[in-house]
Image (cartoon, rainbow, N blue to C red; front, side, top):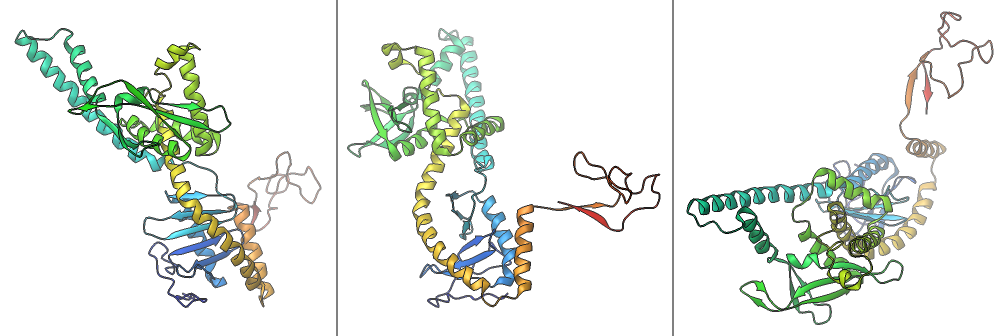
Length: 406
């Protein structure tokens, strides 16, 4: 393979990767499919090493495929960064991909939760049934029978710890129980795109069970997004079906990005609360509708997805800013290098490859297949409106080869 293995600026090794069999050089690779550029970024001096022209196209196509299929990635208007499980980092330049939200990324996770929840639920119901039947046989069945036992189990389950979170003012670790999620909610501040997360909790513990009156912690900004993600993972402990996951994905895609969806989810939470309690302040304070635990299942799953995406975006956006600055300098150099002493045939080849990539796949239609533009008919030497080649009116008149249809 015609590619250097050391940086042309600092002579440091560019490293190797196992993700690109046809291009095993480098641990961070940048590519621009529209312009036909491919660089290996030195991890020591962070300079961009332009690859030889003749090896780029196949590598760029493979990089595009890997970038699209990678779970961990973030994209801005001009540049995207993806981290492969193998460790290779891909920097994609140019127009961003469609803002898809890969359901398969969360499908396995939510599916496992759902199956585990069903197993636990079945086991719990069986245990309750044994207790009730046994108690009745001994004449010691408690009043309420199955309903009483199921309520007891529900109470015990809700007393469990949902998460340990940081106090917004003192950094003290606060234990939030599952039951508190029914009174924890998003609250709009009134300013566009701004909201707070109000988390209910109780002070005082005895053998794992809380006592004392409920109190509220208020989180804002990035802290609110992070805490919401932790608590939603517990609110979604039962996972979701494929249908619910697909609905959650569509909710995010319909508004464009995770940040916009979170704003939409806050408005929906408030709408549900007012729909249930009206405008009565006392009823609004007690209402559980629209709380973290009582939101519709697809919205809860979508919130968990969105908070994770936002956390990843923040973690990677600093790298994107640095990369974008370096890219603009490297692109200027690459433009000069690619056009320097390049034969006309190479320029023509580059233009044809760019056109092919922009136009997509081409279909070769055999002669006489009857394909024409909408509203048109095949024309023969007799003028417009003549019969198609190969018909009874023109026997044997069929051009050689085929028609190429874009």
